Image (tube, rainbow, N blue to C red; front, side, top):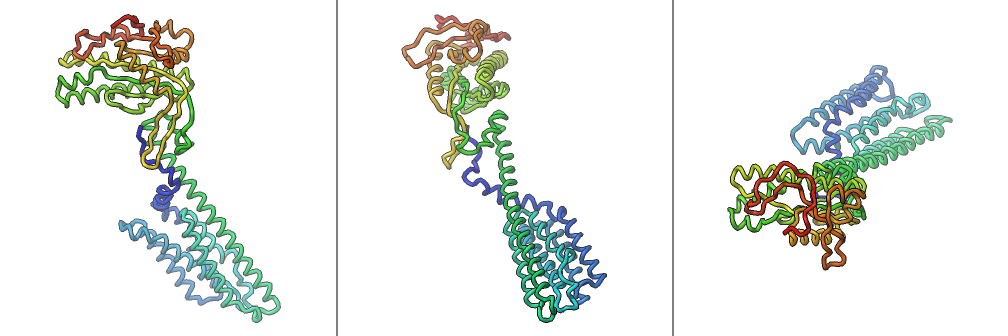
Amino acid sequence: MPLPPASSADPAGLFSAELPARMEQDFERRALAPRLGVVLILLLGALADYGHGNRAGHWVVLGAYGVVTLLAAAGARARSDRIRAWLPLVATCADAAIAVYVVADHVPRYAGEAHLATDAVSLLPAYLFLLQTGMRLRPRLAALFAALVAAGWAAALALLMDPARLGPDGARVLVRQGMGLAAFAVASGFVVATAAWMRASAAAALRAGEERLMLSRFLPDGVATEVVRTGGTASVAERHATLLGVDLRGSSALARMYPPALSVAWLLDFRRLVHDAVTTHGGVVDKYVGDGVLALFLDGDAGEQAARAVAAAEATLETLAALNRERHRTGCPTLRVIAALHCGPVLAGVFDDGRRAEFTVLGTVMNDLSRIERRAKEDDLDVVVSADVLRQLGAEAPERLDARPLPASGEPTLPRLFALRPGATGQGPEDGARGLPSASSTMLAKPVDAP
């Protein structure tokens, strides 16, 4: 079955590119707490005249940061895509400027200011902004912030600190300041690496969730989860499957006898009928081929698969019986189907050639199923199963289903076949001459010499 375009060729690509935009839809609200913490620190520093810079400058910085915070919140709500696109970069640069100012304001210039050396309070804005930038899951943005702060910090040390003016402890103070800068650089490396790892992990989780959601429309839940977990062509593996092929009899005759619109409508009715029966019993419709439907049963062990496939075939005939009763009342011809079941090892998974991805199965079992369908058509049988399917159902299955073997065919590789018939359903030929179907649809044997 064709699947939505796979992203296995670019595992992080599209989803990784979309992730920051999704994260930043509500980022400013989540970043409000660290921003308010920085505002409080700046406010307390301004009130206490903490630092050796211009005292009026403290209030200017506090006001500027307040304006930046308000603009960031307003920009996050802007309708302009350009504003939202540039907002993270502008906010990051503004945060870096604030952090550098606070650090530079606490760099000692002479011995009397040694007590003003950068400490936990003066470094807190830089670290809070670093973590906040990392929360955006944009490693490059976090690296830019770290580079701007480190460069500004190093420039402040080079321009403002004079070991000679600091006296005997000048070298020790300089080393301590350098260690603070080195510690910030190491912390920045951890934040950038963590942001990159979390971005890739979140993108992978997002991709897996969306792919599983899309695949769940086509595959059983367990199979969809396995396909997403293994991903791409790596999911192609040998496994056991039970195959159910259902063909609509006489579709060519219907197309000749009735308007195309009616023929197409009846064909779609048939497809929906089979699809519902298959999915209800844990199978998946692999493909539609003309007037035929190929269904796969991959979940569970071999016995469970066979039981579900037989139940799906029976449900198909039950629903068809009800549909034929309604068609008879409206004067439409009744419909007949042929069901063939076979099982065995197959190669199953997502086959992706880079142009189109398709979940399907390959193997000799598929070839055998087409020959079983052909044998059913030649002998005008309703339901034909292979001995392999009956074997998976248990030793009592042939007797319980009243299955009777068909004469051996001239194809030595074809498995032993058994004919089944839904009792008294009275599937009519294309002209509906066999009468009305009954409500009963218990699987019974069809005589092997029946036409």
